[in-house]
Image (cartoon, rainbow, N blue to C red; front, side):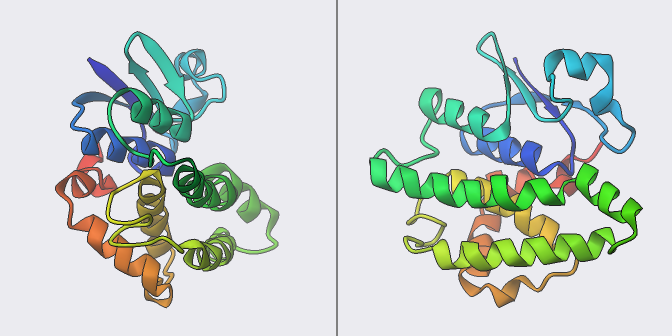
Length: 203
């Protein structure tokens, strides 16, 4: 049995849920409540020394970091990145633009810290960095078709869907990014994508 140590609103865990669903891999979810601080528990630190989610138990391995997990799934279970090296590099760049540039500065720990400093609200901080990041992402969609790269769902789409969920939660008008909004609308029509939505998996 595949086990995903998950939090329903974690963007990183959401990415992995999307990948598992798209590949048709059944898994057992083990919630780790970030709001209650369960990510700092001894049990979670033992399986994930960074004290975060997700962690995936699969094939006798314990994997951390969402993009590393997705690349493992691509290499062992199915196609989540293109085979062509140039296309693969482009999909990685799109993925990293979200997972390494936007998401880290907008995660719960950072938002709470910003809010505690009193310089600006955590919501204003989040809106600023998501808007800045999505503006660049929109310009990077040079090979878009129905999805971020052509007409096949890739790792880039798995990063985009959770980021748009977060953008909408803080009141960003995603239609100001027309290509991005169109791609997300296409993705949301897929049952595997819809099944991973936080509202569908909240415990």
